[in-house]
Amino acid sequence: MKNFKKKLKIYKNKKILITGHTGFKGSWLSFWLNSLGAKVYGISESIPTTPSFFKVCGVDKLSKNYFFNISNKLKVEKTILKIKPDFIFHLAAQSLVSKSYLNPNKTWESNLIGTKNILEALLNYKKKCSVVIITSDKCYKNVETHRPYTEEDTLGGDDPYSASKAGAEILFNSYFLSFFKNKKNINLATARAGNVIGGGDWAQDRLIPDCIKLWSKNKRALVRSPKATRPWQHVLEALSGYLLLGYNLNKNKKISGESFNFGPDLRKSFNVIKILQLSQKYWINGKWIIKENTKKFKEAKLLSLNSKKSRRVLNWKVKISIDEVIKLVILWYQGYYFNRKELVKLTKKQLNFFENLI
Image 1 (cartoon, helix red, strand yellow):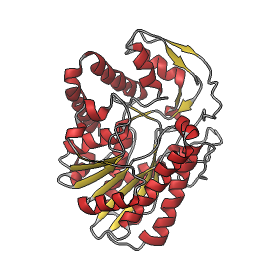
Image 2: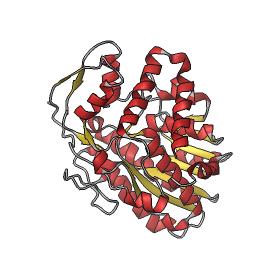
Image 3: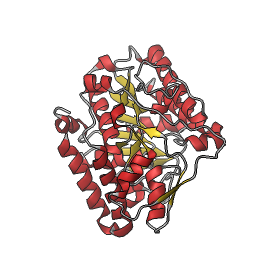
Image 4: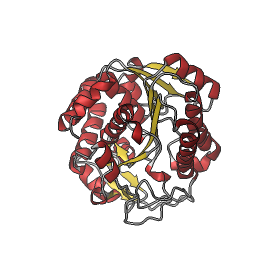
């Protein structure tokens, strides 16, 4: 990514609002932006897991925190007008497919109404602002083909989570064409990332965190979808795409209203068993048993993204091999379980390693 470190300087001393800043990706993004000298503000309903990257890496002390539900339109508008951000990264969401079946209303409320409230708050916003709306690779109508999805493919979703993300994309497009296309001070776009992994993810139904919780106790992990194939990538790969998109929105009005995929190509998609085998290289005693999914709800087994547009327009590309990704993830969790006092230092080291690659 040409001149990436130079482009990151755009965030120094800028006011950055991150919604969902207590979550896995939001916490990493807050940590990174703080290291760049940004003034980080966050909106979240709560801290979603215990433990959390947000707490164990001290992100709670690196950002100005506002705790309320993103579906509260009035509070969203008041907070944005109070902060007066230069950039907004909207990550707040109900992010689990399984939970979307159990509580579809909460999923639609967070993922669709929350996005609408961010856009509504910007309708009368006067300051220049670049806005990245993060949705998901699951926003596509997935027919489980080996062909990676492009930004022009049909949106859809069989489960409430995927449908809500497709809905957020449709909502975004409608608001852009209706209200923001000719609004000179607001540039905005959506970002669709693949399956991200990294240290500090403790959400349920996550492959590596679920395994490591058990491996740290010398127990076998339970694997329910061994053949499920995903475009695995480190969380910093996706976040670098979001940051590049924010930079380009700030510099180039022509991409406002567009959507961008951020994921490795199909050749870097691997099934669950392959990921576990790679993990075993670094967590030697990691073992598992296979118990095929018996849950009633459907889970996609094949999904990948075509990110040629992001490479062409933003000069973004994946830099870390899958083996290195797994190594970084396992080393971070080993730091958490066995050397927690040095965890922040380890996190900074991994961030510096990634920045120096690009």
